[in-house]
Length: 539
Image (cartoon, rainbow, N blue to C red; front, side, top):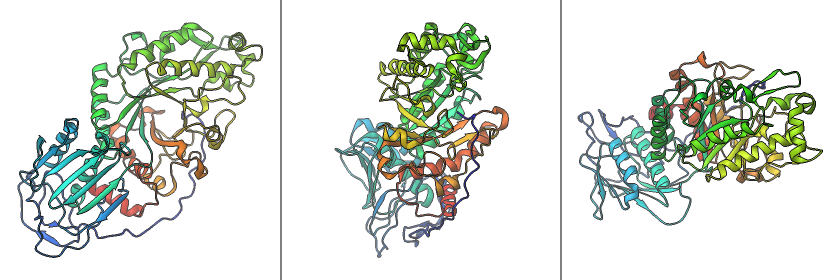
């Protein structure tokens, strides 16, 4: 997905807006603090030293003086709405409890209790000063929540577990960044339902531990998808029982993948696997050279499988079926991009076996593009049988074919430089749902080949929105509902250009800038300088 040339980044437009409300004067880490706790109005509520790891005493729910109206908690992403109130706010207190009103919230309760140094008390009907209560309500977006800070207590309530979890992330950041969750009511929900990060582990193997660290980071930022591109020309990186011969020496075991998937699920993150086909199958073809696509002169076409052969479909479907149990989420990425047979000036002449198969399957006018589209539809049918929603790269959708891509295949739009390049509006006008992978802003390509430049958080924060699908121009607002969200992508074309730690550092601010735009639809209130300072304070 990163072999085409791209334009140089557009000139950054100036951006700077004053941030509303007062700032907390002291940054307090979870589990250790020393100094003065500051209330939401900026005045001291007490001083002194407390032991490392011990929560401070709770502020009095009955203030003896007048409090200024609270300010919204400073979080990434920013909350959508905060109704201010007067009061001392809430902070984790020695002996404080996390209680739940439903057993399904136990995981969320135990996690936030461990993070804030509180006691998880399970299901309780009574109420005590300092309590954090997690509750389920009725109706609404399952990722929405309400956080109420009142009378020395916090209640986080949502229609489903996911929303409650996101409320605990807001609370965690509020305490980490300012020591106190401000009095009042937060009403919050995401602007976009798909908020993703995609990692190319095929070209560069990443350790399970590094991936797990990213999951924790993504969860705290309210991302809900992790894409794993684990098969490409350079490697096949997950253990296989149906075709062990295709697996690279350096790979993740199924046990490691299960731990990754389970950790992701605990953070309400869906792991989206990708076995890219019919191109980018070099690792599979190394073990099955008889399936290699060759042109009329017998020259092998790199990474391309011969889709005229029945065994080609069989081996890919074997793998898709095998991993369905390992990745239980409802999404599946089929790839579909850069099938090199279609880069030929005359695909039918260059690949007569594909042309013959196309005519046999689709009549005298059948083309290689028809055959490739049929391949995509067949793979979609394979994952659909396992109750997955398929997606494919936009250059896997071809113009003027007699075979149409299945309507439920979501378009993962990454490039405007594909064969017969089309504007994003063409996909949208056809009614397609689209995910934004804009390579101008969201592609972190190791080594910066082919004119790619490492994206910056500042540029994403100031110039990108989910409607900016191609280049720097937004599609018309009428299509906003069809854009399901977006995904930041790490591609490892020059795998040794950066270490794992360098990748983690390089994507840190771009991820934070991106989630701000996927969660909150409005213009950010903070300038980039202020946003970056907040990110550094939150850790």
